[in-house]
Image (cartoon, rainbow, N blue to C red; front, side, top):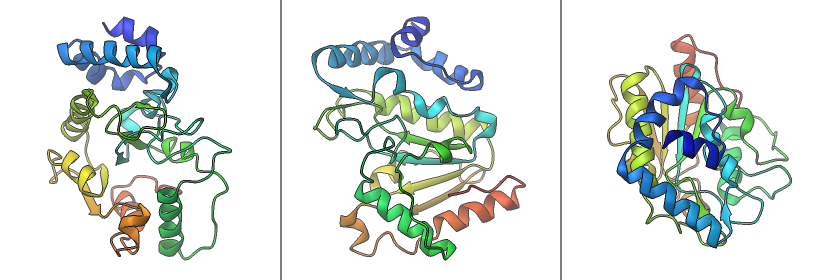
Length: 230
């Protein structure tokens, strides 16, 4: 099954991630999931492209993991999703939630720089796992693959990270992400929680001033890890 999935979805995962992939790919739920995903892509326009579904795991080895950010599902507009949560391809307008993320970073680091691209690959390259709960979506229909069992897979990934790594920062923004983080070992890892960066939440005072990016870097420095260049 794993060989089939690698071929179909063009997985180029770092070898250190392979144990969790191989374990989950042989389970019945995942076999059914992958067939459903394939049917969705054959029948409808879905995002991201198949070769980017597992893109979050292709950026670095698990030994390099420093931070996990959990999103809900990929952006559903044409040309937006690139397999990294909250991230969009170069040339795509920066989404409102990401604008609020960039604004918070500026507030925390007392700077005025605002990126011209919403592509967060430079975060991923530094060991930030930008993980959506659902890794696929149908065009123009947010959360349209919620009925598929991506959640089972991504829950297993989070549990695997919690059990097999140390001193990782988990950034859980909004109630959905916080529920996904219920099984994280908080004695081994730093878990930071706040409201979602969406305008609805941010405008109610539930996002700005959370200091998650500063706290993350302070923790990484304390653990003798390189800080993230946000």
